[in-house]
Length: 506
Image (cartoon, rainbow, N blue to C red; front, side, top):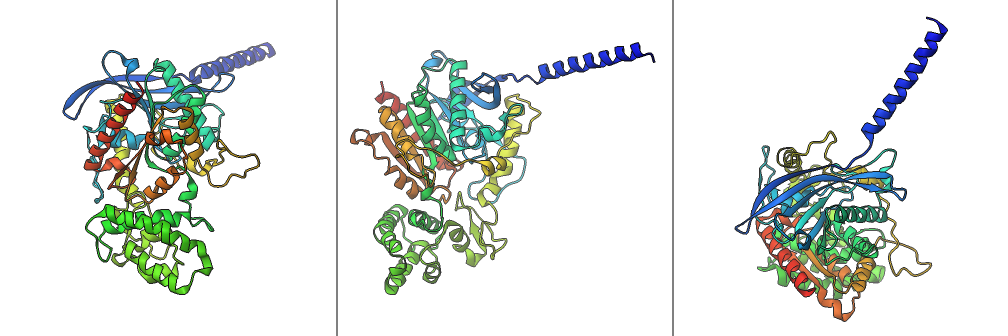
């Protein structure tokens, strides 16, 4: 080979590599994608035709460079005046959860048929018409946050850019704004609906969106957590022991562990709530100063309200956390209750392990939702991807940045437990038309209902806005829609809330 030939081959190789690199760059350039299909769903006896769109939206930085691709599934009812119809943006929590649970659990036009507080069934699982979908009342957009579903960072951008309280709010806000722009829905009545950590997101997101000019009509919360002080069993924090107590009572009542067993739940809960604030809370504040006789009397009352023995309460210094309650309530039968839905029970695989053995309820439904979502994406929505659809992503929650600077924080104040109640207050005060709907479950130890009611009481709204908050209770666990009766009740309540909100704002 001559030197000239060598130089020629070298130049050719360099040119070939450059062209290949350019081709790779062209191939890798991110693009938005959408696949639209047509469907019908029968809701409350009426057939509704809709367009389902599975697609992606690109999030961009200040230099307009794409930094993330966000996957969504939208359902819009067919017909005229699309821009005038309400639209609701829906997401779950985690952090690190896709929107699959609300999507195929209770709000979308199809749902996965799963056992309710029963033993898990095996494949094949069934996708059925969802007669309790709220597509008759509002168009729906299910959003998978970055790191879940098919949503992911682009290029060299790290997931941590999106994995934090404030980072997540900005990303979800940008996603909603991008959807409103692309589909010309800026002037539609707008709602946001979150479950679990999604409610925490919603409180901050409502305030953020309004600062960007996106005025919401309503915020809908399912199984809420708004201030983690109310649910964190940390040393020196007695608040959760007080606020979880009514949930312990409801769960013990469900499993017939109370002696005597009251016939009706609601009057019992009112009595326990009064006891929690007026008797139990002052006693915990006494600490070591509490007289021994009073301690024994309280232990006996706590036993009557929870199904645990008085001696267990005394050994626990009158403080039983949620993990201990899950393990102890059915210990005589070798069973543990679920955390998110304490109606579910499982074998206590390690009675000496002072932690949750496994997620009882989630273990019963995960297979059904995983199979159902993958089948639905390919066979119904005709959306194919080489990426795995991540129902849950533990890497997101492990990397989550919990720092959040709330509105009204005084200069020099030190942040403690993350709290978004001030965000929600600011959103409702600055937009006095905004309505809030709260939906809570009695058998949920992840987001106990009494803790939610306590945090809502700290909203400190002007008297004129007090009627803008409504609370509904359901005799189920965290995922309100897994039970046929409660899913139907939730549908009725959601429809009524949306209709009444729009009527009041005309």
